[in-house]
Image 1 (cartoon, each protein chain N blue to C red):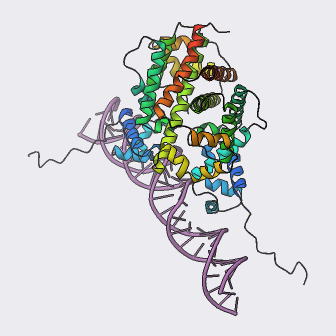
Image 2: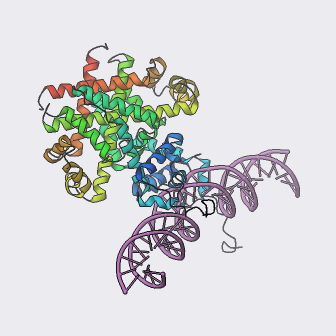
Image 3: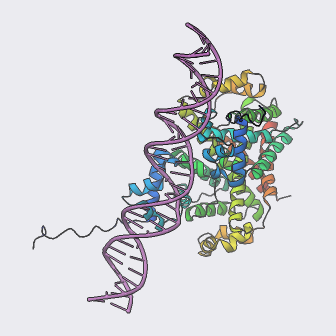
Length: 230
Length: 230
DNA sequence: ATTTTGCTATTACGGTGTATCGCAACAGTA
DNA sequence: TACTGTTGCGATACACCGTAATAGCAAAAT
């Protein structure tokens, strides 16, 4: 009896693990945004029934948590730099780059406490860079303040980027021309200061805007680290 | 022919406007979070068919936009303070208070450009407070940096608050005991700095943490306003 | 009086997350 | 080897979602 006569062995269920599930979910999100991620589509991409996923996740929110932590692996710098300031800068820029690669990250950033191993590793490396430069409270405040700025800045940048892409126009053009609503509002004269900034302000690209704000915050941190807390 | 003989006049459709729709949506969100807001439930609360809403909004996202702008009305300070720093502080605290009243605001903050009349009014009053204290670019950078911090800080606070409420424990207890995952992670010794902060750090209440970080950022702004830009 | 128009209400479609449950393949025992 | 208990997978089912299409109907226009 040759191989050809014997039937195929019964199809074993596709092997599965969290890594594969998360990878599929991230691929979907990268292609179509967070809203394109459904358990059914993730399962379909793995040639598996939707219910199968519940062995590895117990809720969709947990899948999002795993996705975020996976991205934190991209954010974690491979080598620890010497200077605390550089450490924070690198973390910030790597986070921003990750968000540009995975815009859906902006929707999740700061939305839930991040307790995954990679997020913890990032937190560890950040705290380690500042450890000993001031008392615990000050260091913690420093990290939290920079993190808050980071979350907000990344969110805004991605939000603006989406708005621009939706209209296919540059930020300035979008504000002036394609946002007839905004133009109309500004022309009412009820927002003189705002109008001045929109019409007379120079357009700065997102990266330098991000970096400048970050530097300001880091300057503030530097000042507090230098002097012991009040 | 008495009144009793005459039939009731035909029931006119319930009068509707955006204000009523938004109010119903906000009530729903206040009670059950953003996820409790569905067009069907909003409509039901107004004794109206779901499709009726599409005369006033064309998508659910637009309803969210309206909700956010409605909250900006609560944020807008009634009188303009003299000092720019005080203006930014007041805005920040009013935003935070609004988010504590309407936790779902944290989910939406920074998620989309805010172009509603109330949001514009807040932007106007903020820019007006800083207008003339430096060149346009610097002022814009200042507002954006503070706003980014504000978004991130509010988001984190609400996220932590939810996590605590979910377990019914204080933040510290949640981290130490009820977060067995975190404890286990920290006990691996892979996160020494993080462990030190979690175990030895003092617990600071959310408000002072928020205020302190804000003051740091404002200090940075003050420094840049004092000195003309590089 | 009749036609047109502009809302309104109903129905329907294609999706969602997840609880429930029957079944088939395996492990262990007699 | 036969049987039985267990485990985990898949299909089915439920309740709900946003919204497109459509049918109905009262007011306005002719």
